Image (cartoon, rainbow, N blue to C red):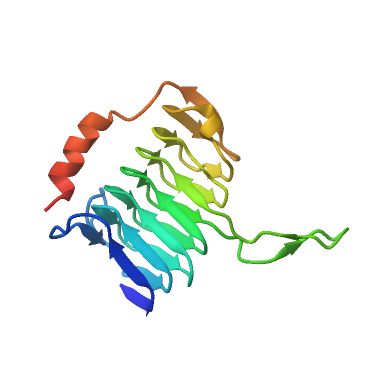
Length: 198
């Protein structure tokens, strides 16, 4: 793991337990890493409990920004988090491998007719008990409800609260695919507690 910068702040807003934050934690099917994990921390990261980062991740938290990770939240192997303003993962929000959560478009865009500038960044809120499949892209302005499942290879970039809870969304851009569907979180919670808590 490469530390690009550690000028920021880390806060643990939960009872301290041994092994509660896992970097490169082996909780997925793959067992090897290629050694490209990087952390750039000049903003703030808040851990609300147990958190897991998979293998070969990239996490970039800019100065003045905040990443908040709920209890038992995670990002899978080769996942990417780029936080320029505010990203919040709810409790038990689990992000699949090769997915990315990015709250900025990096470059200033303008309206070429009237010169109006568009915001470069906007906050992201992911609800509790979200299951995000692999290779999903979550961009600025994304807000998801609790008990939201996001299908593989989906692009999210808006507020989905009006769709209600216990939903499956997917596609480019994301749209409602199915209602009244969720992971069986009672079973999942037992398994996560068993395998991820030391």
